[in-house]
Length: 204
Image (cartoon, rainbow, N blue to C red; front, top):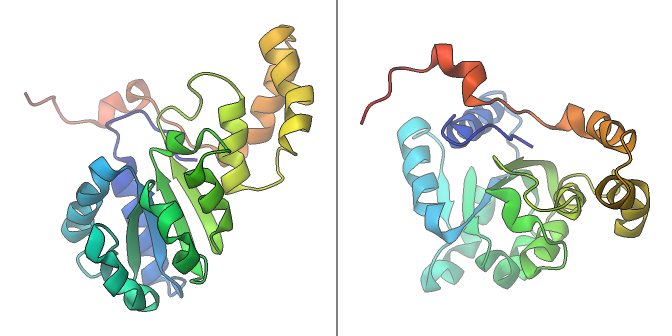
C-alpha cells in the first residue's frame, strides 16, 4: 500500500514503477490500473506524459468490448471500479504482472462487486494507492489486505476476534501496536511535513 499524503505524487510513483519493471524486462504481462471513473482519463494523460513508450489500452465506455483482443499486447490496461465486475469474465482470463488499485478505499468493503472482482484477477504483484487506507473502522484495512495479500490477516471473523473487538470495543492497548507491526512492512507512507523541504514553493 502506497499511502502517501494527497499531493505527493502517488500516480507518478506508480507509473515510474511500471516503467522500471518494463525496462528491467519483468513486465512479461500487462499492468492493470483500476481507478475511479473520475480519474481514468488522468491516468491516461499522466502515462502519455511520463511514460510515452508504454502501450496503453483504455477499457472505458461502450466501445471497450471491441478492444479486449488487445489485452495481451498492451503494457498498461486502464479500467474503473464500476466496470471491473462487468468485465471480470474477460479480465480474469488474462494474467497480469501487476495490478494497481488507485484510491483503494473503493475496496474497503469486501462484499462489494468491485472487491469480489478484484480477488478473481490473476496477478503476480498487487499495489494499492490510498492516502486514507482506513477511514472508519479496521474492517476496511482487512478488506484491503484481502485483495492485496489474501489470507495474511486471516479470515474476517478471526481478524474481528484478534483485532477489531479488542481495539475498537475494549480499548486494548497491546493489540493496536501488534497489528501495526504486522502491516508495517507492506505500507509506505510519507506526509507533507516529512518532504516539505524537498517540495518547490507553492504556486497559486
